[in-house]
Image 1 (cartoon, rainbow, N blue to C red):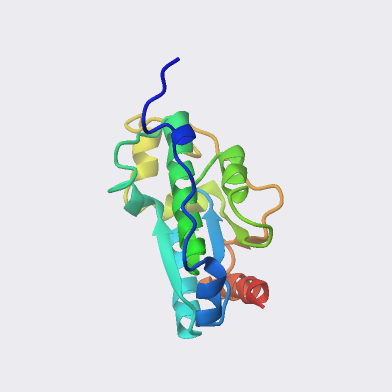
Image 2: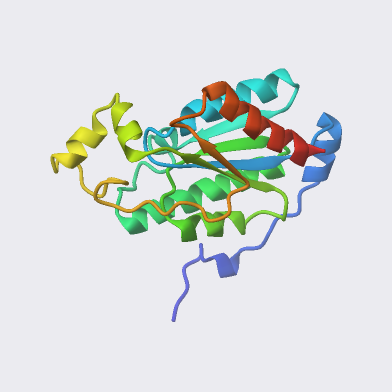
Length: 202
């Protein structure tokens, strides 16, 4: 069978002249991938922004990868079928890995509904480099926060393959952090996430 020129089998890994450890030494902290997962409306993006603010004030290099933002660029060719959702998370995971290699603490906020996809992302990182945060929130609370009207449209059949309504969400079995965003305050959730992150950076 003929292979295309761009097949991964016909390419190699480029060895960098400056590696991750060099960057970490320069900035005096290690890199880390923080992966926030949960239903739409569970507070992933809000938490990612608040945690980033706290870490930035502490002098850490950070970046937020947001699911909605990536779908306007890198993943704009993807829909919401199971296969497209998996590809969306695969791409996001690869980008997060590049940020960690660059010495950055990257916060990724994605529904990422399928457990297997999240485990494939985790496998991209060295042990201790990946912190999974389950933004746990009752579906009714998520629907009450539905400022975009997405849940209403999904229940009316206007949106298909919507997580929590017509497509499943598989919660993490053993996340590093679980925050109850339906009952805990934003500050309390941020405190717990930042505490785990700073502990991992030591």
